[in-house]
Image 1: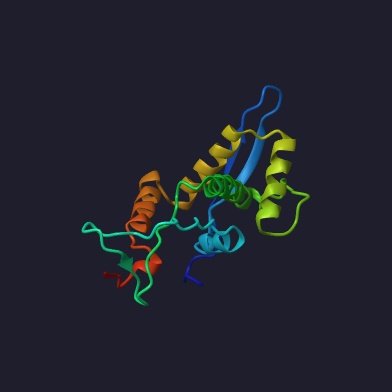
Image 2: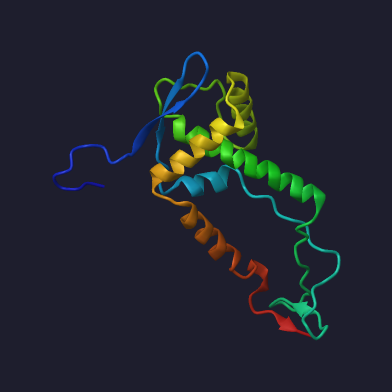
Length: 176
Protein backbone atom coordinates (compact mmCIF):
# COMPACT_ATOMS: atom_id res chain seq x y z
CA UNK A 1 0.00 0.00 0.00
CA UNK A 2 1.18 3.52 -0.72
CA UNK A 3 -0.03 6.91 0.43
CA UNK A 4 1.04 9.92 -1.58
CA UNK A 5 3.27 12.23 0.42
CA UNK A 6 3.95 9.69 3.20
CA UNK A 7 7.56 8.57 3.21
CA UNK A 8 7.94 7.09 6.69
CA UNK A 9 7.00 3.72 8.07
CA UNK A 10 3.39 3.17 9.07
CA UNK A 11 4.38 0.44 11.53
CA UNK A 12 3.84 1.62 15.09
CA UNK A 13 6.54 0.87 17.64
CA UNK A 14 7.04 1.80 21.26
CA UNK A 15 9.87 1.31 23.70
CA UNK A 16 8.87 -0.05 27.08
CA UNK A 17 10.92 -0.53 30.22
CA UNK A 18 10.72 -3.52 32.52
CA UNK A 19 12.04 -2.33 35.86
CA UNK A 20 14.62 -4.38 37.72
CA UNK A 21 16.65 -3.73 40.87
CA UNK A 22 20.04 -3.44 39.17
CA UNK A 23 19.45 -2.69 35.49
CA UNK A 24 16.18 -2.04 33.66
CA UNK A 25 15.26 -3.97 30.52
CA UNK A 26 14.32 -1.90 27.47
CA UNK A 27 12.29 -3.60 24.74
CA UNK A 28 10.83 -2.13 21.58
CA UNK A 29 7.43 -3.60 20.81
CA UNK A 30 5.60 -3.52 17.49
CA UNK A 31 1.85 -3.17 16.94
CA UNK A 32 -0.02 -6.21 15.67
CA UNK A 33 -0.85 -6.32 11.94
CA UNK A 34 -4.40 -7.08 10.75
CA UNK A 35 -3.31 -10.63 9.81
CA UNK A 36 -2.14 -11.46 13.35
CA UNK A 37 -5.37 -13.18 14.45
CA UNK A 38 -5.35 -15.41 11.34
CA UNK A 39 -1.73 -16.34 11.99
CA UNK A 40 -2.53 -17.10 15.62
CA UNK A 41 -5.56 -19.25 14.74
CA UNK A 42 -3.43 -21.20 12.25
CA UNK A 43 -0.56 -21.80 14.68
CA UNK A 44 -2.57 -22.25 17.88
CA UNK A 45 -6.02 -23.59 17.05
CA UNK A 46 -8.48 -23.30 19.92
CA UNK A 47 -9.34 -26.65 21.53
CA UNK A 48 -12.74 -28.08 20.68
CA UNK A 49 -14.87 -29.27 23.60
CA UNK A 50 -16.24 -32.80 23.49
CA UNK A 51 -19.96 -33.26 22.98
CA UNK A 52 -22.34 -33.95 25.85
CA UNK A 53 -23.49 -37.56 26.07
CA UNK A 54 -27.15 -36.55 26.13
CA UNK A 55 -28.70 -34.74 23.15
CA UNK A 56 -30.13 -31.26 23.62
CA UNK A 57 -33.85 -30.69 24.13
CA UNK A 58 -35.96 -27.60 23.62
CA UNK A 59 -38.13 -26.02 26.31
CA UNK A 60 -40.96 -28.50 25.51
CA UNK A 61 -38.68 -31.51 25.94
CA UNK A 62 -38.36 -32.39 22.25
CA UNK A 63 -34.98 -33.35 20.80
CA UNK A 64 -33.18 -30.62 18.90
CA UNK A 65 -32.11 -31.72 15.43
CA UNK A 66 -29.72 -30.26 12.89
CA UNK A 67 -30.47 -29.69 9.20
CA UNK A 68 -29.78 -33.35 8.42
CA UNK A 69 -32.23 -34.59 11.04
CA UNK A 70 -29.56 -35.84 13.46
CA UNK A 71 -29.92 -35.07 17.14
CA UNK A 72 -27.82 -32.17 18.37
CA UNK A 73 -25.32 -32.88 21.15
CA UNK A 74 -24.22 -29.64 22.82
CA UNK A 75 -20.57 -29.05 23.70
CA UNK A 76 -19.45 -30.10 27.17
CA UNK A 77 -17.68 -26.93 28.31
CA UNK A 78 -17.10 -28.41 31.79
CA UNK A 79 -15.03 -31.38 30.58
CA UNK A 80 -11.81 -31.36 32.65
CA UNK A 81 -9.51 -32.30 29.76
CA UNK A 82 -11.05 -29.56 27.61
CA UNK A 83 -10.78 -26.96 30.40
CA UNK A 84 -7.11 -27.83 30.92
CA UNK A 85 -6.45 -27.56 27.17
CA UNK A 86 -8.32 -24.24 27.04
CA UNK A 87 -6.25 -22.86 29.93
CA UNK A 88 -3.04 -23.89 28.19
CA UNK A 89 -4.31 -22.36 24.94
CA UNK A 90 -5.01 -19.04 26.67
CA UNK A 91 -1.54 -19.04 28.24
CA UNK A 92 0.17 -19.82 24.94
CA UNK A 93 -1.93 -17.19 23.15
CA UNK A 94 -0.59 -14.62 25.63
CA UNK A 95 2.97 -15.87 25.10
CA UNK A 96 2.49 -15.72 21.31
CA UNK A 97 1.26 -12.14 21.50
CA UNK A 98 4.20 -11.05 23.67
CA UNK A 99 6.64 -12.87 21.38
CA UNK A 100 5.18 -11.32 18.23
CA UNK A 101 5.27 -7.86 19.79
CA UNK A 102 8.97 -7.97 20.62
CA UNK A 103 10.42 -10.27 17.93
CA UNK A 104 11.36 -7.35 15.64
CA UNK A 105 13.43 -5.62 18.33
CA UNK A 106 17.03 -6.02 17.09
CA UNK A 107 18.20 -6.41 20.71
CA UNK A 108 15.87 -9.34 21.43
CA UNK A 109 16.56 -12.82 20.13
CA UNK A 110 15.14 -16.26 20.76
CA UNK A 111 16.86 -19.62 20.30
CA UNK A 112 13.62 -21.42 19.45
CA UNK A 113 12.48 -21.57 15.87
CA UNK A 114 9.33 -22.91 14.26
CA UNK A 115 5.64 -22.52 14.80
CA UNK A 116 2.75 -24.16 16.55
CA UNK A 117 2.16 -25.29 20.10
CA UNK A 118 5.63 -26.70 20.77
CA UNK A 119 7.27 -23.53 19.49
CA UNK A 120 5.28 -21.37 21.93
CA UNK A 121 5.97 -23.79 24.78
CA UNK A 122 9.68 -23.36 23.98
CA UNK A 123 9.30 -19.55 23.81
CA UNK A 124 7.55 -19.58 27.19
CA UNK A 125 10.46 -21.56 28.63
CA UNK A 126 12.97 -19.09 27.14
CA UNK A 127 11.06 -16.18 28.67
CA UNK A 128 11.03 -17.92 32.06
CA UNK A 129 14.73 -18.83 31.82
CA UNK A 130 15.56 -15.20 31.01
CA UNK A 131 13.65 -14.09 34.10
CA UNK A 132 10.46 -12.59 32.70
CA UNK A 133 7.55 -13.02 35.07
CA UNK A 134 3.80 -12.98 34.46
CA UNK A 135 3.66 -9.28 35.33
CA UNK A 136 6.26 -8.52 32.65
CA UNK A 137 4.36 -10.51 30.06
CA UNK A 138 1.05 -8.94 31.09
CA UNK A 139 2.62 -5.48 30.70
CA UNK A 140 3.95 -6.37 27.23
CA UNK A 141 0.53 -7.61 26.17
CA UNK A 142 -1.31 -4.61 27.62
CA UNK A 143 1.03 -2.16 25.89
CA UNK A 144 0.93 -3.90 22.51
CA UNK A 145 -2.87 -3.97 22.62
CA UNK A 146 -2.89 -0.23 23.31
CA UNK A 147 -0.24 0.39 20.63
CA UNK A 148 -2.34 -1.55 18.14
CA UNK A 149 -5.24 0.77 18.88
CA UNK A 150 -7.43 -1.72 20.66
CA UNK A 151 -9.01 -1.04 24.01
CA UNK A 152 -10.28 -3.45 26.63
CA UNK A 153 -13.79 -2.41 25.53
CA UNK A 154 -12.97 -3.29 21.90
CA UNK A 155 -11.75 -6.71 22.95
CA UNK A 156 -14.77 -7.33 25.17
CA UNK A 157 -17.13 -6.18 22.39
CA UNK A 158 -15.47 -8.52 19.89
CA UNK A 159 -15.64 -11.37 22.42
CA UNK A 160 -19.31 -10.66 23.15
CA UNK A 161 -20.15 -10.46 19.44
CA UNK A 162 -18.43 -13.79 18.91
CA UNK A 163 -20.19 -15.43 21.87
CA UNK A 164 -23.56 -14.15 20.64
CA UNK A 165 -23.15 -16.10 17.40
CA UNK A 166 -25.17 -19.33 17.14
CA UNK A 167 -23.14 -22.55 17.18
CA UNK A 168 -21.96 -23.50 13.70
CA UNK A 169 -23.88 -26.77 13.55
CA UNK A 170 -27.11 -25.35 14.95
CA UNK A 171 -28.30 -23.40 11.94
CA UNK A 172 -31.65 -24.49 10.68
CA UNK A 173 -32.38 -26.73 13.69
CA UNK A 174 -35.63 -28.60 13.67
CA UNK A 175 -37.60 -29.75 16.71
CA UNK A 176 -38.98 -33.27 17.06
